[in-house]
Length: 330
Image 1: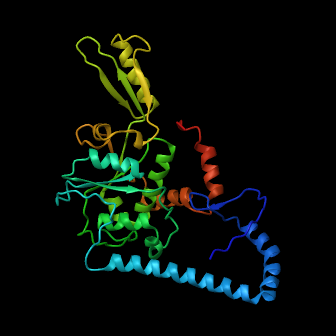
Image 2: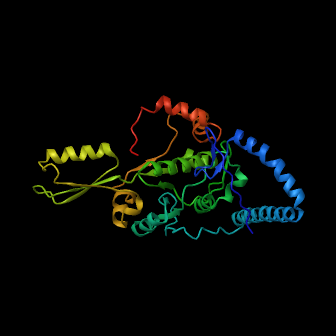
């Protein structure tokens, strides 16, 4: 049984819960709607007791179902034998210093990564959709999210807080690599995962286990010139693309003789391209993540401003102040 209703409301300056904006979270709007709806709903329930009981039973059943689901996840996590996620394609090596796992955006890109990887030391965990913004999520509620549960079980480390001394003896990979599209949406996923690791796995952040894989945004098909054969050149961004074109001009290649294609996402890259540009240790560009000159307190304040649900005004002010500091390819 399902309960549905339609409510039409025009709200100024709306605020939403979650990254996919599935729920309105404006306090003034919630209070206003409650003020108008509650008396009528209470009267209707008083006049229709049978429907009220059915509605109460439905709410109780759904609450019990959520509780059972959470308990099942916790039990799976706390059992003596680690049950690895079914969608994890693990590596063969047990050498933690060499092993690496790629958290890949999307199932299609995950398929290419599985085919293109070195199965000896590279594991693949595809992620569906955008990971939960976990900045304000309590630790005991983390595993209600399947993606976060799978990440934690795969890497072999329990969530912890800054200042804790977590058990890292079961850490399964020396490098945890975030692999997402080279566009703005991909950057958003990177931020969500970095938020997760900074807030709930800070020891991995501190130890330098977290990395960001940098797939190219452009491919340049350069014609043969002199002794140089036909080449496929890759650029991370528009700046590198301009540099490649300038180099081709200096080599005497006629204007327009080369072809340029833009990858709309990781799913457009075949296994060979993904290996060559993003996963091969000899040719890839992997960015280690660190706090740099930030202290933990300063970094936490910045994360709170960027990811806190009640910080919309602060985010807007920060964007207005720093919006011209960089160019975004959207």
